[in-house]
Image 1: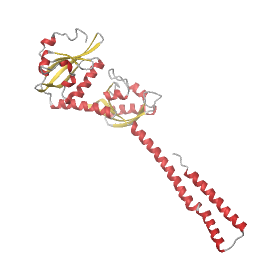
Image 2: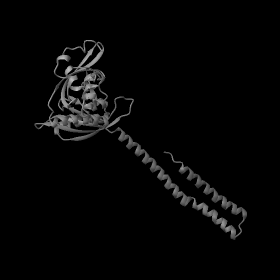
Image 3: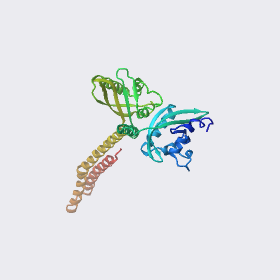
Image 4: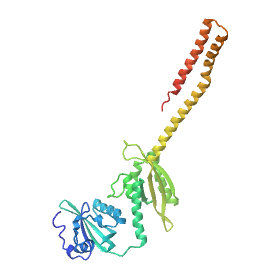
Length: 326
């Protein structure tokens, strides 16, 4: 650890919890007050990760936030529940990104706060659930000003479009260029229409980020955000349905194959009932006739041969019919 970063005088005099983390979020140093409030006398704070101090309900949200701070090289305030020796306690940390001598640190200056209102706690949980849903469900949300086409994206939408979430989202014009030419105008018209009439709509579009890759399929719900009777933004949620479309295409191929097989099987049944029975009945009749009434041997052979030739031709056709290709 670089000298100078951990030797802040404030660690000794602050009455609030101060925690210094390395880039893997392992604790490097805590203020004297934080050690007193969060750790037992025989515990060494540097043997803990910050996550181990966080309440289970907040772990995922806090870990995501710390990753964002590190990746975006920014500061951010986070409200969370810490495991104090006396139980859980709400605290707000003001995290600062620090880079010194090739090392990355996160410095959190905290202050204990009253328990937030229930609505705010629910908002924390809802935002976290939305991030999980976007990742699992291959979803992404976006907001567009219908007049200026200025846009904003959720984390999930950055993931869909392969964009760097530490930077502003690409322009609408860039997005339209990634969409199939037959669908791009449909998307733009939907944004403009919802901005004008304030009515919800749904669209389907295809996109790809590399011309050498196949198109991916998306279903999008578009709705207005209305303030004081005016549409100030158009909001959309993209759902990737590529797997579903591919499954449907494969199912249609299988149905076509089954239809071809059923057609050939129907032809086989018809041929077996009619084409085979004709020459076979002739042969059986000739044999039965020969038992009761002697025929000219040459005529008998010719008649049997003629029927046998017809039967052979029919059997060949049946074999060809049963050679079914998928």
